[in-house]
Image: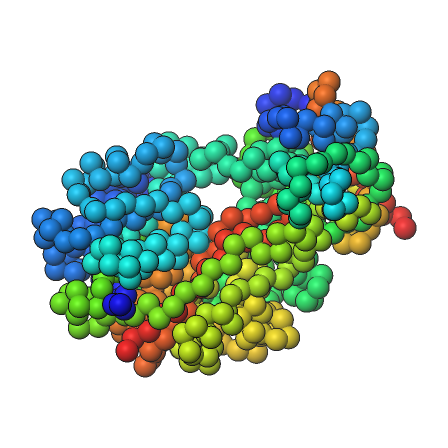
Length: 140
Length: 397
């Protein structure tokens, strides 16, 4: 388990299925039963068509790096993260047509680039709380 | 109906609250008082004379937590009795938003003046900015960004910059040219926090904070702020010989709301709507005050305005964007060099435009300018760029 000094999400009725799924090793994204679209982050209704009829779909375990940054200096977040610098966070585009913010893992940070394949590798931080981490496939 | 004019302005000296360097250490409340005092002197009114007018008081929502019914505290602190009060909640678009709300109240005849106080003290009173948190942030940042180790606006802007480099071939040097050009403007602005000249080599040696962004790609947070008075045509003429007319404005909130695969490196601005409404064209604009939280955002706006058709980076390589150049941008140094007074920073760009149009900008004066375009951008979104986008066109008739 991660140190409790780091900030954890505020779980509520809208986002609980997302964090629970990640803790269980799945990546659930909201799906609209009316228009069929997916959305992230979890929202109180379908931001596209305005339907309240939302359920959840497990996204495939792979995505593509849409953008990323390597954090060199921790500003405006827990100093606990300083032990881990430099580290990469990024935006992973999924086949379901949504993007998820995630921690990006790679043997060599400079080998991360836009368009690289990323494989879901969640980090469990609580019984029903997981964080989206992806491992970037850099030898493709 | 009356036209609406900027009738007076005031800028506070920015501070990093370094008492050891002889800098002022003041709270938001103290800045409110100083901003109002400066404005009243600028328009030649006493506090009692202001209170005898029909006016609205607008304030920005600052970075430090404040009371829920904050304006009730502000008016007591200042001893003011305005007809109306309002608070903007628009981050970097707060200056533009306050101007719009004040404009609407004057235009509709509710009041004759709007007093806009845009101040903030991110470095005071206790933990400096860069300490853990100031005001409570967005749920999406709390839930989906901070637990990953993201570092607020810096990391969101880094996603945008990386994408901009990927799509437009924008180089570090091109980002650096924004910082260097604005710094040249700042060297002529007595109120800029960073005034020492900057060259590209120095920019490139600036440390990475969140790659590809360096320290000099981001604003420097300061305490300070600005005050602006808007007045009806008749009242403005009594206050000043050089009233600056609010020719028009447009906003665009949460564009591409339903597109989960929006391109975060591209920004749309309501520029065509604005110029159609006003009956002018972008070629009429003599200088631009473009909201500059990060260097890349300035390039994206040059693209969005239709000026940099081959990409903002290529444009800034080929053109001079200093106050004396062929295409003046952020003539006072912008927030990158003059400093960002929290959510009041955007009002500073409006005030700089008014100062230029009144030909009171001293050594950094854009010669013979008649029209200036100001943007305000606020709220870095999740998988998006700026959620609040506004443009204001100001003219000296």
